Structure formats: structure tokens, C-alpha cells
Length: 603
Image 1 (cartoon, rainbow, N blue to C red):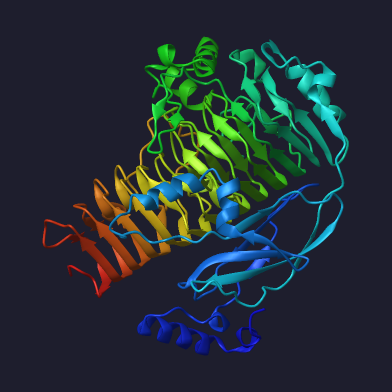
Image 2 (spheres, rainbow, N blue to C red):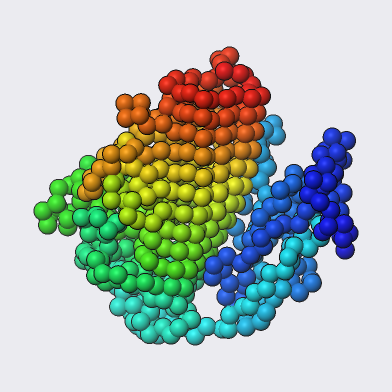
């Protein structure tokens, strides 16, 4: 058992012990290790057989190499080994560090654990201990108590007539099972391929797509109700329903939902585009590659995407607007409180992946997104929502990986902000950005923490984008303790120069430009960014500035420079550039109030 000293020693003495140990070259003694804090079970992250735990790292965590999880006083195991078993991101993270032969990159920490093989309807008392380099443990964290659910009533879609043969349209049978589902039930898609049009979930249910099962979107546009949803209250375009929906049947009516889970080791396939061929990734594994289309090539590239655009054009819509608004996403939820997505694989959406509009408390864990290079094939999006947690996911997407939006233009001020998110332990392969704020920034995006993530091959790391007529912006964003390699464009970008050629301007423009402020980036390594290490673009013609950016202990390797234009009152502390041919990597213009401390090379 660890010493009781660690539970009572003041924080400043713990920090002094840690610093002294590091200076003298030996590990922090176990009594000086802090226990993790805020151990919790994410929203709906439990059932009759498993419970997922997450926690925050201690303030002083440099000498912590693992975390041990106990249930009712019995050791269940370590977070690292557990993550090897449950997270599709972990093999890619491990491979990333195996390639880091120079030991350049920041090492991330794994701070989640999935307890499996539990007994239904049983209370468990969990504690977590930090593990030092010497293998010794800290004191216990505070106890978290969670009860597994009772075994749920099971509604097998095959009992309602679903064939699962990949040819028969199973929409009616699956929907019948959903409609019959009682409170707390599970609707099960066993092994097989279930072709379906739009499905509508309800409150207090689980949809499980079992291992070996695929929910395959129909290729016919008539299988997706034309009157699906509007993105914002002031939007004029009604979009078609998605493959899976938690929406009112009337897009302009209001209906609230709660407690919905989508789980399983199966696949959700949107059938949006033709598949060109598999590519072999850096681990020697095959990944699908979908034809990278646009509004001029969809006729030859698309499946469902093609059919839906053709239908909209036949109804009188121009091609640009039809392409930009009339394709179905895989999942769209609106006004849902408490959502858990876990374990499944997403492929080939005709439009976006998982859309969460005006939701509360949404968790995405241990999922796989293989949508590259399906046009607009985002991973997961949150719009005007409160409370998001995204961890242990693999993203290889045709657009943004994790995206936040908050409305467009002048009327967005009437909406709720996009508020609160925790993003950690994910691997981002392809995508326009690891974590993206915008371009819809009207009601403000705020209070985002992204930490302990790894990326290799995205366009950018932290991507923040808006325009001079969008309003709002993003604020109070922390991006830390992460490793980034081979960004196609920037390591970090903050811009008001964003343009979407497919966007419909069906909103009143704001007279206030978007702005990015109070952004903290710390303890991040960026290797081989292609276009810029850091890029900041304000808009001096509209008196639009970004401000309050703080970069601390960030290191860059490669030829990319920091290109800063339109920034105020910001600090760069211990920012370093290595392998740089140019003696001065800093290009600064139209900015004021910038300070540089311990920057190498100095500007």
C-alpha cells in the first residue's frame, strides 16, 4: 500500500520533491506521486457487463507512466494494457512513437479504463492510482461508485422480419423493432448486412450493431425522407434525413429525447460513394479509399450521393445547392440529452458522419472512422451543444475529424453557445484538422480541452476558421500534451480567410467578424508541417484581430515558419524550431503586443 504522506503533503512540497528528483536524475518517490483527480464514468458509458472510467491527470504528472484501476479493492489492471485491448487508436499511437527514433515527440498519457466481464445489476466501487517509473503507486483517488444495469430486454430485428442479406430493404423491420422497444431495451442487429433507409430512434434505448453486422444505407433517395431537418432555426434549406436519426418527423417542430446509446463492434456504411481501392497504411493495414468528388464529378463518383443530388436537381434546385445540402449524413441527433456512441466503425457517408445539434452530454469512445476521402466526410460534429467527450477513437476522414460549430451570422446570437468538450487519447490520420472550431462561429465556441492526442497526416493540428461576416468565434481553448507529424498544411491555424464553395448563404451576415481569443497551446511537438508551423490571419480591413494566444513549450521540427498577421496581446514562451534552414522562422506583420520569451531562434 502507498504511504499516507501522499494524501496529506501540500502541493508545493509535492512539486518541490518532483523537481528535486528530476534535477538529481532519479524517479519521484511513490509517496510524492499525486493520485489522479475527477475519476468519473462518462455519460451512459456502462451497461450490464462493462463500465468505462476516465480521469484527469495530476498537475505534476511527468514521472507517471501508468495508472492502476481497482474495483472493490481488487486490482483490475493498468490503463496502458487495457487501452491496447479496447482502443482502435492505440496501435497507431504505438506505431507513431516507434518511428520517433530521435525521441523528439511529446509522450502522451492514457487516462481511461474499460472494466469488462462485470455482473449485471451490481454496484462497483472504483479507485485509481498513479504509477511511477519505479513501479510504485500513489494513494487512491477518491472512490467512484457505479452500478451496472440489469440485463436489458432484447429486440432482435430478425424477429421483426429483417433479412440481413444485403439485398432486401430492411427499413420497416428495423423500425418495427425500435418502435416496439421498451424503456431501457436493446435493439440488436446480429451478424449480417441490413440494407436500410432512414431509421428513427427514441429515448431510453440502445441500438447495438453486433460484430459481423453492417447497417448499409440504401442507395435510393426515396428511402430518406426529404423533410429531415434544418441545421439552424433561421436556416431556409430543409435537409434530408440521415441513416440514423433522433429527430422529430416534422423538421420545424420541437421534440426532446434522452438517454440514447449506439454501440457494438459492427459497421455503419452510408453507401455514399464508389470505393476506388484499399490503401495500405503505415501499419500495413488496408484502409478504404473513396473517390474524392465535388459538385462537378458526383455523377461518376457517387452512389447515394449521386442519387440524392439528382433528385434535388430534378425538383428544381441548382447543382451547387443540391450538392451542398441534399446529401444524407450517417447519424443526426437534435435536442438529445445524454448520448453514448461506442465501439462501432463508420464508413462511406454521403455527407457528414455523426452530427449532434443542440445536444447535451455526448460521449464518443473507442470508435473507428474510415471515411477518407469521401467529400465532406467529417468524423463527429457538435453544434450549439453542451458537454462533449471524445476519447480512444481512430479518425481517417474526408473532412474535419472533431468539429465544433455555433451558428451563422447575425441571428446566431439568439442561440446557445457551443460549450464544453474534452478530447483525448485519439489518433488522427487523415482529415482537414484534428480539432476544428468553425467555420460556423456565430454564437461562440468555448471551453474546449484537447490533450494527449496524436496525429500523423492531417491537414492541420488545431484548426480555427471563420470569416469577417460570421460573428462570434472561439475562446477558452486549451490544446496540450500532444504529438503531431506531417501536417499537409499548418501545425496550427487561426484564420478569418475561410471560404466554402458549397456553402449556402441562407442567413443574415453579421457586422462583427469572427475572432479567436484566449487560446493556450502547451507541451506539443510538431514535426514536418508543410506550409506553416503557426499561421494567424486576421482581417485589418474590418479591424478584425485575434488575441490572447499563448504558446508554451512547443517545439517544431522542419522548414515551416510561423506566419503571423493580425494578432494582438499574445505570448510565445519556450517555443523552439529545429532543422530550420532559415535563421529566422518568424514572419510577423500587422500585429501588436506580442512577447517572446526563451524562443529559439528568436524573432
